[in-house]
Each structure stands twice: as C-alpha cells, then as structure tokens.
Amino acid sequence: MEEIFNKLIANKLSPNTFYVLHSMSQKIKPNSFVNSSIEVKRLQIDNWLDENLVLTSKSIIFIQEIDSYFRKSKKKTTKDLLGSDYSDMITNYLELFPSIKLPSGKYARGNKKNLEINFKWFFENYEYGWDTILKATDNYVQERQSEGYKYMRTAQYFIRKQNSDAISDLANYCEMIESGTDYEVRHFSDKVV
Image (tube, rainbow, N blue to C red; front, side, top):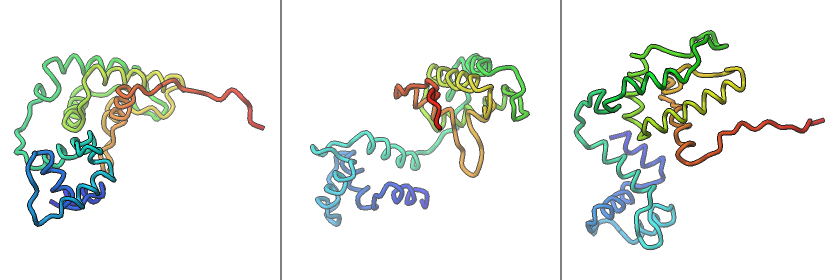
C-alpha cells in the first residue's frame, strides 16, 4: 500500500484526486464526501484531463498501473510472456552483439538462460515487441561499434542492469525507436579554440 501512496505523491495526486480520476475512468459518480469540482480542476491543470474532461493518455496509463496492484497475478510461463518463438528471438538478439571481449573485460554476449531470465523481467515491465527490441539493440550495437565498443554493456546488462532499482537501457532505446528519435551519432566538426 505504501508503494501506491508513493506513486500518488510522486505524480502530485492526492488520494481524493485519484479517486475522482478513477471514478471518471469507470464512468461512475464520485461520492459526495469528495469535492469533485475542485479535484476535476486540479486534474485539468496537471493534464490528467483535457478541457472536455476526457482522460489523457497519461491518466489512462497511470490508472492501469495502479489497478495492476490489485489484480491477482497468475504466474505466467516464459512462452506466455515472451511468445512461442522466444528461443529463436533470444538467439537473434544475442547474435546482434559481437563475439568479443569488451574493453571492460567482459564478454559482449552472455548465457542464453540468463538472457531468458532478464527478458522475462523485461516483458513483465515493458510492452515492446521483438521487432522493436531487435531494432533498438541493433542501433545500440552499431552506436557502440562506432566508438570501439567503449562503455558497451553486455547483452545481459543491456536488458537489465541490477542495482538497487532495475535499470533497462534496452527500454530507453526501444522508446527511441517507437518515438522516431534519430539515432545518428553526431560529432562536432569545428575545432574549439
């Protein structure tokens, strides 16, 4: 429960404000104990609702995220999460990485079973498809290759770098692919004196 309150706070939503937002998403009238008009105004100001009182994509995603805390989770199999051809897809992903030892001293490719574990985590937390994943990975590898593989993550750490919180560079690159961000590495050609 604390995690939910932290998410509300991080998004500058009070429990009452979220209650009104959630009620609107379910098309039910909020309880009279909550001053809906004040909360609706707050939701519009912070772009949770548009001027026509329609939920924005930001609010829909956030409501789904909060709702997911209350769903009973059934353990999904690897095939359910990654798709029926996941073994081939992991092999394709792995083959995008060079078969070399990186400047960091680690091998660029990794154990396929470890990658499967990391991809299970990735697919539980992100909704990118294999096409996007493979394009994003190819862009990442080409970018690192142009710099002599300096600071390149291994195939496993590119998916998920485990610190206190899990960080995914792959998710960042997938987002750039889907948003159409230009990957071209730009170098300055003018000398600065």
